[in-house]
Amino acid sequence: MSQDASHQSHLTFFGASRQVTGSCYLLETPGGRLLLDCGMFQGPPEVTEQNRLDFPFHAGSLDAVIISHAHIDHSGLLPKLIKSGYGGPIYVTAPTHDLLELLLKDAAHLELKDAQWENKRRQRAGKRLIEPLYSLEDVERVLAQRVPLPYSELTELLPDVSLQFHDAGHIIGAAIVELRLGADGQRRTLVFSGDLGNRYSPLLRDPVRLAQADVLLLESTYGDRNHRSLPETLTEFRQILRDAAKRGGNVLIPAFAVGRTQDILYWLGRFQRDGDLPQQKVFVDSPMAIEASEIYASYRGLFNRDDPEFNQAIEGGWHAWLPKLSYSRTTEESMALNQIEGAIIIAGSGMCEGGRIRHHLKYNLWKRDAHVIISGFQPRGTLGRRLVDGARRLSILGGEIAVRATIHTLGGFSAHAGQTELLEWATAFRPSHPHVYLVHGEVEAMEALQQRLADQRLRAEIAEYRARIAIGPP
Image 1 (spheres, rainbow, N blue to C red):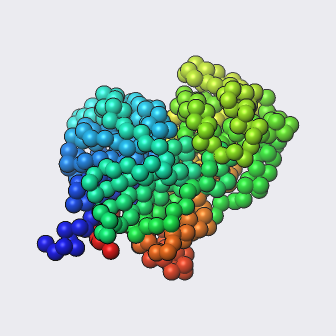
Image 2: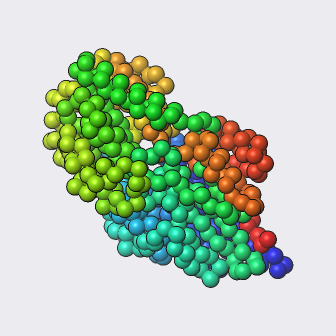
Image 3: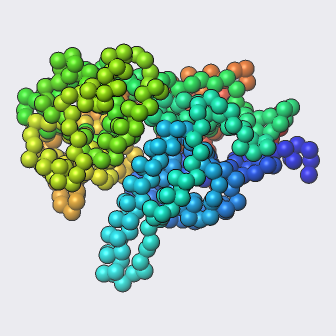
């Protein structure tokens, strides 16, 4: 083996390659093996079936796992990894440490519920039964292996690998992952953007810009477009609420429990304080979103400081900021909302693929005075995407529902950077230009961003599933 080969590291793409979900990358160095993210594949059945495949690597051979943030498409297969034999540390930021407990316990509950439902169908058909991907016991083992690290602190993971987290501004605790590989004189730097936040986030700081990288894994969720401007988005949001109040119907907001719900609560509180929130009640109908909101408030020291009024009010909790807010924690409280008119109902899931929002859609979509606000990215194949694409009839919870409600898309609330922000962040590396690999995006978005990066004289390749690249010495 040559001297250079003996110092080479390799990275293999095992997820979020030419697709948005399933973030997972294996880093092999002379000193050990690390996994960067362990995300679940989300979307239609042909995508989620990938979650049942064996890991394409030996889980027990890993020395460390690094999680960029708590969203399930970046962390959701951790319990399966533990079940498959991994027993080492899981490095996270402090907020991610807390959010993982919330999200993974919910995921385990859904796994059990889905397996029970599927097994009833299989039993009737005389087919082999399936097991849940993992159990609550597997989640508890994940939680015991978490190692929280602060932003900016350099931590040695292996003799030839050091880790530094930087604020990504996507959700609370989201991190840009910087890995320094090798020793002085042979050092290479690998940077994984994680999910980069939108600079117009009302709560979080802008993503930290880094100066040095040899290899860059860059998310490309919105690589083909920019978001609508925030002022235009807020103007439309206010107008939707006014129109809905005049017609008397409910406003349904399918929202991700972590990130989007808290942003929406911020803006509704701002509207109320400006005398511009006509609805008398705002319901958060999601136990997960309620708990996530409380976790957010506990890390208010990581919020930006653009709104002193909010930063002072949030010390008393979200109700102190938005007095019209009510929480629906129990199933009975959720069902009672079927009798409500003229309210704002925020519920999960954000893609309308499960959760309480489906019940509210069933009871409201057929009403002409109802409004549905889609405020986040909707992958192909999801119910939310079908609403955005103009479906006139949908099958929901076993029944066919006519879509008579008005459907709105508010792209300015995205928690992801738009194309221009991605370009500005990726081109800030100086003096060297990293070799860029595009991940976490649909093919069209990746191809568009690849061309724009080429215009800026940055080498960019679209990451291919199972492709293995060398990260050699300088």
